[in-house]
Length: 269
Length: 300
Image 1 (cartoon, rainbow over the protein chains, first blue to last red):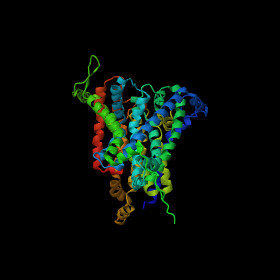
Image 2 (image 1 turned 90 degrees about the horizontal axis):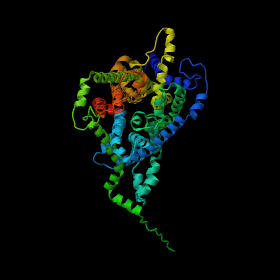
Image 3 (image 1 turned 45 degrees about the horizontal axis):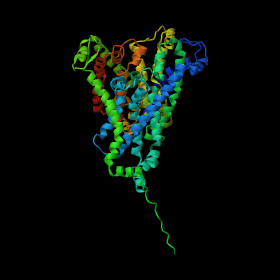
Image 4 (image 1 turned 180 degrees about the vertical axis):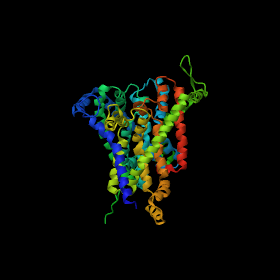
């Protein structure tokens, strides 16, 4: 349908956009092997020593541990809450059912600064009188709040695609609610839970804005990067951390493309 | 012939099983148990927080003691309206968010069109993965990469130098560039999905009726793709509107978010911060209502 010249123009424009998306990432990847400490271009020589230094850097190690801790906690809470809400919405018709989808998406749809401030103010007035200060706990609560939506959407989509008659059959054969959940619902939603969990983990691992409002003195990886951007001496280490994060993002991409394949965004025709 | 009797084991009456039977007979109780925790979390922890924040916008700071005075009034909004600095910041934020949205729509159209209508399925799937990859890369890493590129001794000035040109440096242009880069995948993906939904037969019919490629594009493709563009623009617009880290890293000018952040932290003026934070929320609500009328929600 498209003329030959239109096809060529489209191909060129596509190439240009891809170059625009990838060149900045490539530049950072090169700088991670830069011999010099200062970030000028062109780079003078290549070295692997920053990778070793980053690996042994206590700040980096600590930040990675904190981030993993926060992401695991947030993912687990979001998994439980998102699954419960998805089960309720899938099984029952009740007043306000339509608003639940809206409610779960709200923490991620509103500007991060609003969510961050709201949680900050609440933590200050509700938690601090009980002696809970800003730290890992408040980070996890904040992250879990905006991670619920990925779990909810994934599990609900899976439940909608699977026949409810299987669960009824399980009940007819004498299984009680717990057995049906254990032997039918859980295996049925297992991959959706895994996929949603990885996306939630990635979302939490990368979050900056809400975290700046809820972290207190705890430093996650994004907060560590943010702080060290203003320290020229640390930039070579930041480069290494940056490239590692780019490489790690291939994992959620793989998962996301699998989900897309299932939901028909990617087609295998 | 001997008859065989099958005896069934008596059903266990463990407490767990009794409770399960109770739940089965009382679906409302089961529903309440399912919903209690997630709704408790989202309504009490989250909506409650938002409500407190909204209330705080009407409080004020005692000028002498710097304590929060909780008698409601509109003085914060008065300050925001009277002080030209706040107006300027709001206009700048909205202007850049709009510029970013338009830029992303223009950049996304050719690649989305190529993916939806020209590329083979193999190439298309590859392109989707190639676009998802930068989307999932760390936000800070991407901003940092642009800092390195745009800085005085950076690669951009090095490349432009031989032509006697100089890059934009840090400032509003850098901000526009970085935001456009950050949110571009969020525009490409809905647009691709939207373009793919246009039936081939419509384009063929347009051609059969004598329209040239340009006319078909203007009268068929663009109107049908508009909801998808609006859907993508929800992300590009709202993500730019609420940001304060990118403005901080690649410019020295302020966004709404920077003022809010400074007032929560350094200045410790939560009421003013809360009042200013309602501005992007109100803009986004208006934007979402408009987007809904344009049919964007079916394209999300």
